[in-house]
Image 1 (cartoon, rainbow, N blue to C red):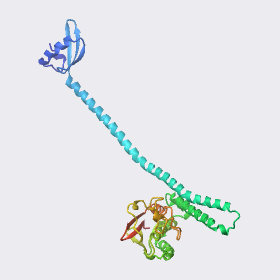
Image 2: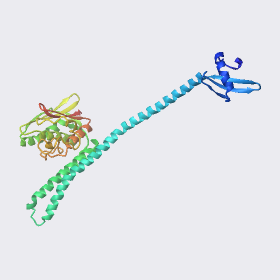
Image 3: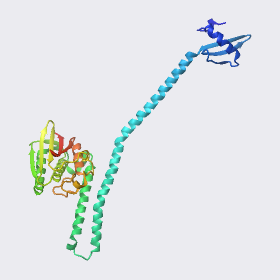
Length: 341
């Protein structure tokens, strides 16, 4: 008989007819009856047998909920792990990139220094073997050593220049930042390189607006301008034209240096400002050199590919930008933009 006064529910008679024989026949004191979906627990009380039933659906519901919650928890932990992995890689990417660039820079610098050092050692070996000869007869070896030493000096200077992260790094040796008359600065550099252009039989055109000023380090800005002008001279073949334009546009000073030489290959354009990058071997060793040696007028054209990288760093340090375009119709144009003072 059902003791309804001791229970909050009743079991349908149809289920009891199927459940009671299984409960009585089993030796277990508790268990689950899958055929009727009931849990049971039985206890002998004298001549009577007391059986308690529980709905298996409710228990299964809690089990399903527990499984769902466990799956959700594991999914959340997995997602959190993936997010942490992604963000950690994202955070470490600049460090890895900087490390790789540093390693590449050291490797490239070592490679570039190796050649002049080899030449100097070879020249010294020749001089030692010919110790009895006059200085005049060995002039070529002495001059070769001088040239290679100057190239090494230029490379070391450029490397130190690139090591400065901001204009503040240059203030100790090059003076503090302040208001710079960019018009006068560009005019002076253009006048210097006009003589270089004349020697190379180039047409030199200038259009410089007066009174354009920017805030920054005059020596560093002069270096950037010299790099662009020197680069234009090297790109341009005899009879070509170099055009220098400085104007104020909106809140920026815009310096454009255009040359009519051979266009730079489109694949090379994104890499021109990379350190030690040269567009191709032909442009490295002749007057159409794609890079430069830091902007010294009349210097050898076989640069190390650091000049444009230096110009870009100077522009960025002054909160400006530098860009390049190159087509067969318009020639090559480098554009330096700096905030007006």
